[in-house]
Image (cartoon, rainbow, N blue to C red):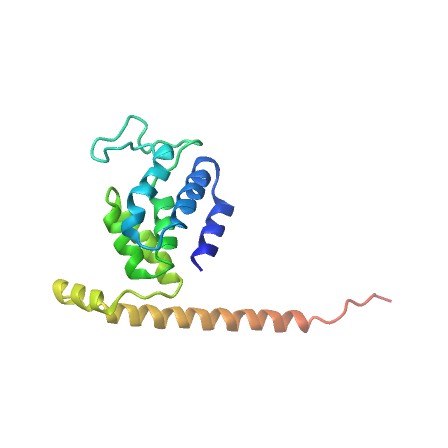
Length: 175
């Protein structure tokens, strides 16, 4: 669930990043549409963001490591995932409309929504495939087949290992 993703992120995040995620996700939980969430999410992350209010003219501390601050992309991506309730279309549209580093934010929130089972809308895939003259389906089919093969080999290897372990028998004392 989107909530479990945020919980996991919070369990791993430290310092300013953790606080930024908490504040942005707290704010995100008050919204059900990205339009109403855009300004409040920016306001929630602003105290932790090193870039500053003008993304095209970053502040001196922009993108420098800090225990007190955070990049804005991860907290906002998680916030949009919550606002959209894990729906791919709404999460990505929210991220894109957020502005600033929206390509990174949309990539993160889209990947998370996809991992949670919300697919890329078919009309988007179709339009991108036609406009770019690319077959988006064949690489996905190939990757799926390779993933299944690797998984099956891993399962076989693990079962062989378990079987060998079980056949070791009890330790015996020498006479």
